[in-house]
Image (cartoon, rainbow, N blue to C red):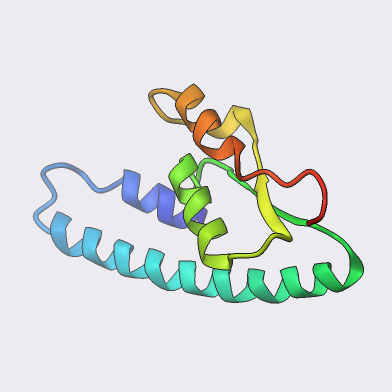
Length: 111
């Protein structure tokens, strides 16, 4: 996932292949998202059986914004899955807005 971040940040504005590279990166991101959701659903089911809530934490790479985190949480769609908010890694113009968005998606105790 870090490779996605590095590569997307390294596409030069004047790169003649900019659009093609951006499309490939977006396709890669969509495929990775599918894998993540599939695997997280499996982990969450295992955690549920053991009474353990599973959390996902933003790290400023694949999950850069609150909306990225919420997208994964929504796709996994389980009361046994939520956000772990790492306030140091919302590298957005207004990280406080990200904190507010994702706050309702934290899980402190089981359903």
